[in-house]
Length: 273
Image (tube, rainbow, N blue to C red; front, side, top):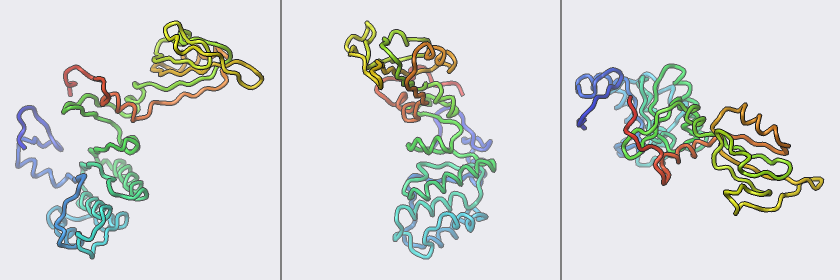
């Protein structure tokens, strides 16, 4: 496809320069989400063919980790065996850049984890991965930065820790006695809810009798999302009798849904590169 506008480079090669782009492809490995092979030949024949095209310096090493039945014709392969064959092909010429689309698709859980461990080891060797996945736990395990694309636009590009931190922490506390939501509307707190005690005047539907804990003591459950620093939060909580406290970072799934939910998480122009 020819670009309509703009520029891009792959390993310093301008994508508008066909000859330069062909030259750098020797340093690019590609793993599609749905590998497609000539199914009338054996896996070994395919490896030999791709090795002749690109070079083969790592297939023996890769086959110790991912072992499709090379002697059988590809049409007899299961989905997982096709994926393992594609993984070997993507890495066999030891490329500097790997482009991977849903790389664990079709693999059993053990092979999935082996692939993720292998990717982390390759990162330590200096390899670069473009890793597309909807399995967000995988993204978190192997990615340094996350780009989120919505409707063809890059709406976010951030390192994993910063993106999760910006999305806040979930705070749940049981405090002694009765409190209102208004008492916890501190800077950085959002969507404060209480149960087991009287609610704030803004949310009369939340009002209820205080719960009783061991010894007949009244308690109120408070929950909210918090985007500030820990010190002010803990300082405020220490003003109350804390019976139970849980502070958890937002799961990556919640971060993702900020950009793909019903509301628009980003309405401005595409961010500058």
